[in-house]
Image (cartoon, rainbow, N blue to C red; front, top):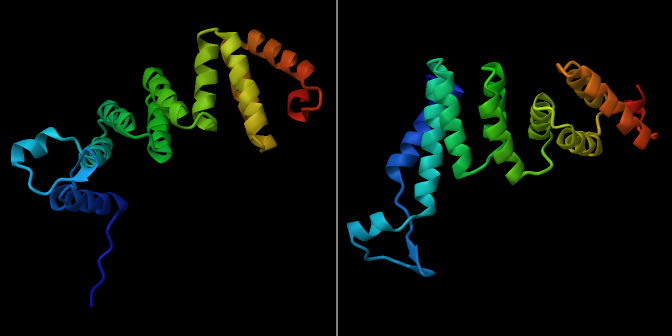
Length: 193
């Protein structure tokens, strides 16, 4: 028997096609399962299946666009998927792509969507700190940095993050901010460095 190996992208395409074409939605209206609805009534009632199918469609289109190197289009599809349902893995992929494309508007939009779903997620918090620093919104940046210090348990990750934000164009303000935080948190060895 010959074994066939499918790539992750091909498998996703096949599964999405099967799902989109072969599933019939269960329709619930006012908490009661509806069995004898006409086609026009079925089109009016939104179902979780419709949203799920739309989510998979957007993810699939993003993957296809990414494969064709249409990165701005892929970002649009990822953002559309995240407005349907925030999934940290999709958000992470979209943030990485926005960083690679140097698209700060998309990164900000993705980070905001992700933070609404997971307020303690480190990756979007870091994006927000970088954005706030670039906009010279030091108070917002400080709040973000304090939260990251609280959440990030890996000291080497903290040091890397501090090095990255210290390289920002407004370096003097960032260093002053870090010194203020070090004075407020004398027990934090990372800030002392």
